[in-house]
Image (cartoon, rainbow, N blue to C red; front, side):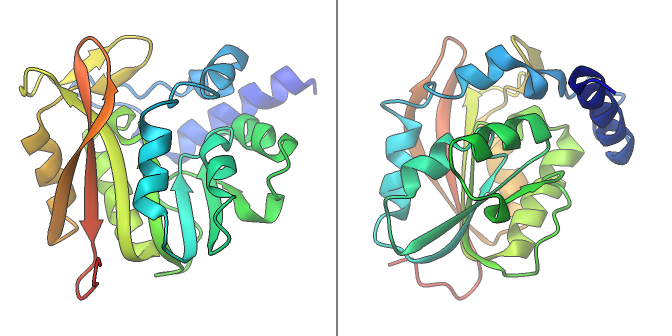
Length: 227
């Protein structure tokens, strides 16, 4: 079997395992194909410069413990955070293609996992912190709830999530540009995170495009001192 055929077969298996989370009757159709695309992988190397990559460092500087990068892609953010000696960064992604890119950068394979972010292999409260950047909006509505709930399960303290919200602050629903994504209001997302977390803070991100602006949702487990 050629490498190309292997990737195609792997994608088919992933879609079967997701049991309908790739699409539903509301028109949401999660597009997995870009996660095996070379050009898409290259785009992950610079898109967060000057905004989200600085912001995740600001949110984690001075902290210590294990951290999970949810939908880590090629591992660019893991690379950036590796300079903080008190953090041990793990990453997971649905794409074996992107994980191989991360390994080729020198990120240790034992800290990476190929899995669906709605159902990971990690133990409960294994991580002190977790984060996702520009990922959750590409899941279906049910998939978003499941992913947030999974982040709650595996994270002991705080989970940070940056998602684009509608610049109009309206629930514009499933929107298709390069990839399909939810372009909804801040309130819509707040309610999603509040399904799992009792305490959710919202911070502005510097990231934006023509129709969306970035928001960080800081999700805190019960009894955690955020100081």
